[in-house]
Length: 485
Image (cartoon, rainbow, N blue to C red; front, side):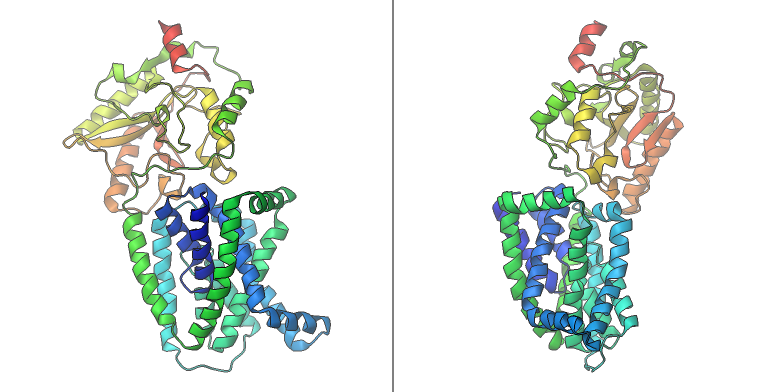
């Protein structure tokens, strides 16, 4: 991430954390516009949230000081308020601890999800319009739990934390000023709670980012100062009952997000590898693969393009147009197990009758490439890549990654997600996208299953041949040509 991108994202976070328009949602949208890498989003979000937490402490320093003194002196009002803050943090704490991986999966640049959740934020803010008369009611323990549930819901990018918690408090007839104060102070517990619960390794990673990465320093500082400004502005907005304007804003931005999110499936999904590509190559060279093939499986590998010219090749790893932006194969080839290839041709002929041809993204993959993918992929995305410890069916020449093209027009078919898109949109059972996209995906899966292939549960494009009898191989394409000639 460049420093100017971090500056923009930091300002976005600082402003939107307190304005009721979803900071996480706007970070995802800004990252999408700037084309920053989705794998960075979660860590950057943590860093800038620390900055905005500090801005809360600064703006409410007198209130916080009063609470601390009251706790020391066991004053009932301050003790009760503090307990309510703790109670309100329980729901988000439970979700954060028990469903950490699921939460991380939301921060992958899914603009369609963000847009949908912004519409929910718009609805929450709209309902507050009917609560024009202020009350003198303070927050009860029951209110604290309900407001805490609203905060837990705001884990989803696109649902505003301040918007949902303040709206919920107002709908519970809580005094506006007290609702805003409670909303801002309650976020301190989960933010600092996350830091405490992180392992020593995790804390050191965050501190190293802040101390040694210029982009994170810039993002932290810009979020801090813009947060102080927005926090003060928000206090005035709530008091003057102007949340309805932000409802309209969220409605507009949400609709735009849904529109663009529904039309981004052909874009290449990128991550930033956690190790340099050169380092990954060295690791793969010195690593010991699992038991390699002893069945002469390489003799069963066929060149699919030579076997049938109707297959269209788009071998992403022979170029930099892939999730790691690096070239892994020297040339564009697709080798496949002989028996599996014959079944693939039968599937191709069946699809041809329906007006579709097959695009091949990847087939046989040497084990050392699988090792590079695994070592370079962030932990929260590793379920999209094979564990080299056991090898993969790609290494056996029995897995194929495919898409479709329209035979009449020659154009590739717009699927729900792009190839190698590490989001839930890639799941074969994902219910988003258009009905047409779901129907085409399901049709492809059904055709492949009728021809002895099984779809991988996280990737609609990945199919394993069910009757594979090959072993794991680590030959490059050039070596396969050489030993089979």
